[in-house]
Length: 336
Image (cartoon, rainbow, N blue to C red):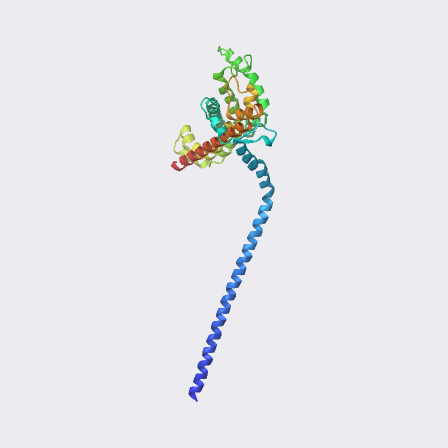
């Protein structure tokens, strides 16, 4: 009798254990199911948010594709073709012949076009950056800073045609610049008629015209430097030159990088001012730059393939110079 009851209790215990284990298993599956449902819901919500985000970005992406990506692809196609314009049926593939012609012996694209372009951009950056640093540093120590920034910014909002024509008349033999030289006892200079002075003369105008934007950026950078650094330097007895070279310039590096990169890109792409002041890049090839060469090959000579090839070469040149500038500034920042 005791054995029977014990056997019954044992079966009951095993049954209870089995029921409990099945309960735990069912509960675990329920938890896993609920977790997978929650993850699925999160994934669906993220997908909806992504779709909504791209819908809001669609107008900008469409504008970017139509006015940048498609023209870039079309320029690449033209650079590998011969096309006189107007009728796409006349498009004839020529492979890399356009690039080979640009760099062939005797071609004017390397010299003087690319050399003039680099000199033009470099001269613009040196003059504009140096002048902007000096003027911005002086403005921060003057009263009515807003007035001075506005006066220096006025050339930016003035059209290139107006700026070019005003300076063109100032450079004339009887103009203001030669008048000042004559008053100082110096001879008149044929600024735009002499091949040796034509390009430097336009570089000065380009640097002057782009001075305002650089000053705005650098004055903002100067105001962002904590004044406590200058107070500490004053307590240590540091001079003005030491403060400028050891505190101002290193802390102004991000603004200097921005100005340097943007000014270099502007200088490499500029040609409107040269057209206004010289007409066709004269005298001779003294002021012929890459952007002007592209314009003339496309709209004057109807050689769109060579113009597109020159445009891609200029694009690669700008990209390489910008990357070098970024690397140099980052290296100096790491070394400092």
